[in-house]
Image 1 (tube, rainbow, N blue to C red):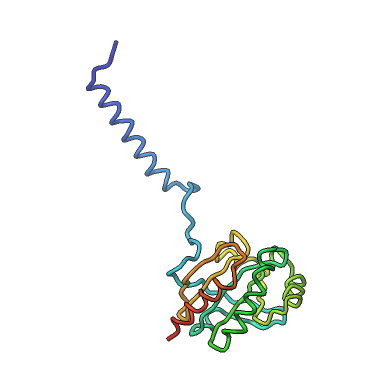
Image 2 (image 1 turned 180 degrees about the vertical axis):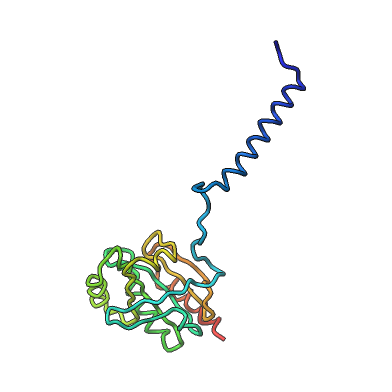
Length: 185
């Protein structure tokens, strides 16, 4: 026996309704896949706040740097692109620190070691603050997926640009920093 065209329409509508209902319910079920509650920091949004220590024990809080443009760089000593871009970051820092630029180099110490971070900074002659993310909390806040990861943060604490991976060329670093410095009130 063949169902009538009206029956097919009824069955089709029922299947579509059941499918829509399943999608709506499963999106709300505990354990269902969902977007993360804290998205990765991105341009146009406030940079997540954190407080970390240098290897010497000095405490630095991002919130205390409001009024200054900040280049936040997450890195590790074993990261080849990190090593390649750090000398350019040092030169840029030397040229722009008197204009208010702050560079914070946050070592992913949970994937590295404090001793390796210090040796790396000493080997490259880095003079900007090296911060130790011992438990990976800052890496999680910034949804760290690749090293290096850099965040160009304006004087109001708003991320202007995110660069995942590297190494960044010195000319690009300078352009991005000059853009930040041009926004300082």
